[in-house]
Amino acid sequence: MKFPNFIKGIIRFPFNVIRYIAGRLKFAEFGRHSAISLPSRITGSKNIHIGSNVLINSKAWISANPITGFVPELILSDNLSVGDFAHIVASRRIVIGPDVLIANHVYISDNLHCYEDPEIPVRWQPINQCNDVYIGEGSWIGENVCIIGASLGKHCVI
Image (cartoon, rainbow, N blue to C red; front, top):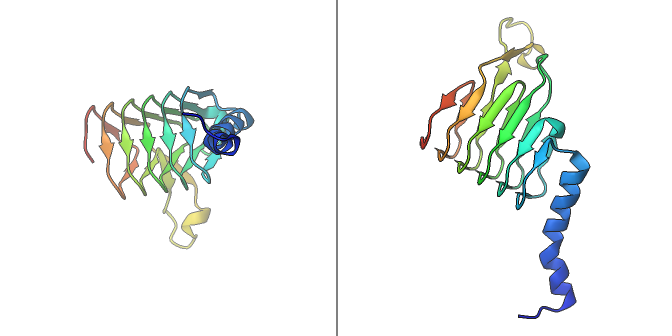
């Protein structure tokens, strides 16, 4: 089927934006046929490994910043789908295995805010480094789930 030139431009536009973002942010790895829907927020891209066929939907926030003294590593394996408004924050290490489905409004982190002094707002208290997070192959993380410092095996439904 032959498309007019303006249709070809529309079809190619998202992939050109994805290539621009991937090159501009300097990911540790950005696999073939992966896509980040705009607008999304990506911080610490040099510490993020994105496998092949990964889809990060809009309004997601993916972060791998050294906020607790470690060099973080965030690994998003092949065939992963991340829902809208998902929030994945690695301060040490998060590994999400292949073929995982992450629904909308999911929070995954290996750290949390301390609350040791009730006289100080939580925002200004130190960050507590939790365990590394591993999500096993073929798992499904449903809507509104929070995973903080936990590991899941293969084919889990949360």
